[in-house]
Image (cartoon, rainbow, N blue to C red):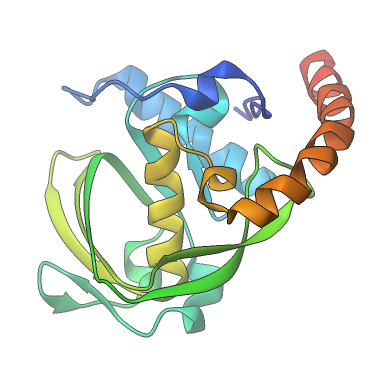
Length: 192
C-alpha cells in the first residue's frame, strides 16, 4: 500500500525514532508499504518518520545507480549493490571516515528542493535486517550518502540541518514559498 509522505515542517520529521526491539508482522508490513511508497515516489531512500511513524526503520535502494558506488562490502566480502538492495534495516549504527565530499541531495519530504550537502564519503554501518541478521556494511558514494541521509531522519535530523549557514539563510524564503505547495500536495494525497 502506498502511504502518504510527510512533508516539512511536520513535527514527526524532528522525532527521534524508537528502537525496534522486535521485528513484528506490523514492522514487516510497514517496511513493505514503505518500499512501495519509495518506489512510487522515485526515491532512493525512505525513513519511517517520512510516513509518520517514529521508529528506527529505513529503506535504501540505489541499485539503479550502481556506478555511483565504487565499493560495497558486507561482513568483509565484496558485494554488488544490486545484491543487497533494497536494503531494509533497523537500528543503524554508523562510523565514518574523516574525508568528506559535497554532493547534491534531495528528500521526499522536501519535494522540488535539492541542495549540496557535505558528508563523509565512506561509512561503516552496523545494520539489523528484517530477518534478524546483523550485518556490517562498508560503502562509499551514493550508497553511503543515502544510508547517512536516512539514518539522519531516524534521529530527527533533516538534510537542511546539514547545509552551510549561508545556504540555510538563502533557503528560508524558498522554504516559505514551497510550504503552501507541499500542503496542497499532501491534501491531494490524503483525498486519494
